[in-house]
Length: 378
Image (cartoon, rainbow, N blue to C red; front, side, top):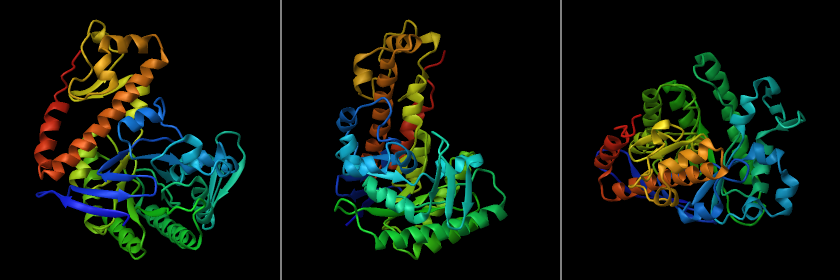
């Protein structure tokens, strides 16, 4: 069975689960580091494996443009191409395409767009998106959907929802008519849209629930709306998505977001924050986020985080990490990334243990008390 709910936490919707794919078995709730182009930036596969990273996310749009489908097919898929032995989820690339507002044209048949690399013209239909992900060989595939900014007029959201529904149904039909490229089973998720309109969210989830997708993602959030509004939409959505399906919140988020949304029943997350912030010298720690370029760290020879054991926190001081960033040494980005990914994955592991012990809400409050204390004040 692809997904099993193992236990629930009394007093909230947090739950412990297990995803079983050909490449790995993944305990949920889970955070998926982002490897857009087949690599999680500034960290090696070896480091990810040491953290027991069961799944990463890659992007169909970027892989389609470079290295291209011919290379990936010749290498027998992305797993072998990047030498990654665990699961991969691929986004359809819809967000990237629709962010190119001046370079794309939408029709019922699909979307025509210009490559951000060389300006060449391309066309993605729902069927083409599935073909691409079959060649990539990802364990979990995402359908083509239209991504809207926030805020958006309801009239436009209604029109977009109709188009997205058509595309997702076409993806579902083509997925079940096609065969895996490399012999192992793949799984297709739905993406539930509707912006911040509760009635549209309800309508779309109910419509997609008529089809037996392997999982249900919540899209179109973390695009500018206030956190409390996002949490309300998540809460509504997890009440409506079938309990035996994994619930994936796309593009979220901060450590606080992860805790709040696990409490509301989310099983899967992805976000660029741990790797992007690391490359800009920002470290996630038990006592809040640290700007490693801050002058107050110049003579601070303590560990960045004694309560989160990573290669970085056990071997290097805040003063040294600051020195690396001021010197523009690549090692600084690598060490910060190792720690941030380690911090996020430890947070998810700690949440799973708390749910198993039926102690999630107490754990959440204890974590937030430390994290929001802002111990590092300069």
